[in-house]
Amino acid sequence: MKFLFTNDPPVIMFGLKPGLEKANHHVNCVPLWRYNYEHQDVLLVKAIEDFKPDYIFTEGDPPNFNRQVVLELAGQYSIPIIYWAIQDPVWYEEISLYCARRADFVFTTTFELLRAYASHGIKAHTLLFGCNPEFHRKVPSRLEYEAEAVFVGNNYEKRGEAAENVIGTLVDAGFNVHVWGNWWEDSTKPFFLPPGYCRGSLPYHLLPAVYGSAKVVLGLHLSWLSLTQTSVRTYEVLGCGAFYLTQYTPAHKNLFCKGVHLEWAGSKEESLEVMEFYLANPRSRERIARAGQEHVYKHHNTTLRAQQLVDVLRKS
Image (cartoon, rainbow, N blue to C red; front, side):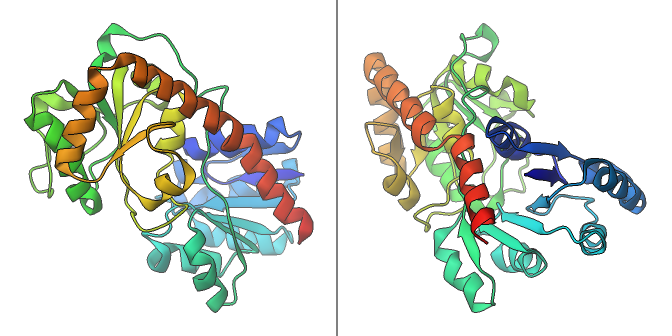
């Protein structure tokens, strides 16, 4: 099969794209959002005519992305559109439903939304995030990234309370915490940090080095109701062989074993308690990190995700 991706986020370029390639499918990517909005049709026409894809793959809602051009050209060339609703369940009504109604195949990270899609006449399938063992792997620690705890991600208002419970608790307790991402110093946000903790935006290729240099990697999530949806961070951290302390969500309880693959905390008190225990027990941290990596390499790798995608397409 031949897939043409219209965007290049890490979840595609380090995820599904290499997963499909490893399964012997052909993949091309034309990141439309990086180009002038009015000229994206020219780029897409050239990509379609040169590559002759079987499917056009779209996901989420990138900025500066001319979705109408994709819809029009897919129809003109009779190419099915795949839509992966990676922002479910948070943006289901505002973004996903609109895009799904205009796609031929729909995938979501959130199992609970399959019925909601069906109520609109849309047959959706569950497709979770995953890790790429060739990129998400354990690498040697680097002095400039060493910390007791690290978090990589933006300061979204919707997870302000979670950030307070996990990151804020550890900062207040005096731990050496590095926080990478945007808006962490923004005092208009529900939660913000002093400048000394903020490291700025992290280039994605440095992710394994940052995770490999911290004793504990922290996890926050925008949804805490689904049994399947988590941030892609969960798979990235575990794939990098790091010890993961995440905000509790039902999905983590459903997909992983506490104290075996990772650890979670449901309150400020528990965050502090778990952090103190595992900093004092490096062998336990290392054992859990190894088990977590083995688990995602076996059950949640991007080649498996690619095969799940292809299986749906072949059956349709």
